[in-house]
Image 1: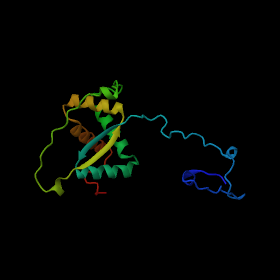
Image 2: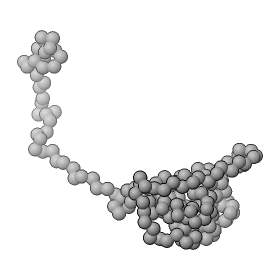
Image 3: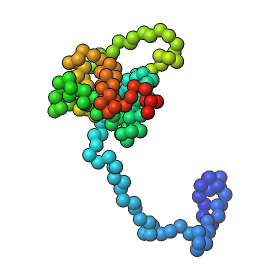
Image 4: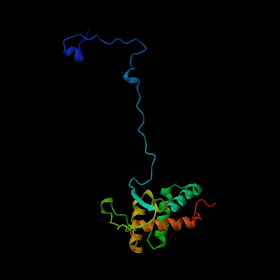
Length: 173
């Protein structure tokens, strides 16, 4: 009998494990290694920036209707809306993209106080992740228009939804 572990430290003998033919571990040569997993996001940017804006409840319903009608996701809708509207206000499409640590600061849109019941005026959070180029175009468009990102993105979404003929009340069909 071989002595190992805590029992051996106490001076007791520990019986050696006995394996039958069926329960014996497989030899090391029989094991195979799995091929390394490849990334599914080939060709997509690895750096995305978070963009969170508050949108009115009716616009949120219109975005939901647009997702159902177009088959695009909210992130694709936001990208297309921001880039279309940035092009319309004169931002070039081949803008130089600053490094992440050199991103310029964008002034926030001042909060507007609304008085009324919370249920009526409650805005909804619309959060997506945008590419560095879209972020740079958004910053340039905010400088051109003098609006903050909150107002610019709301206007861009509204124009895009109007262009796609999504009604103001998404419940109308």
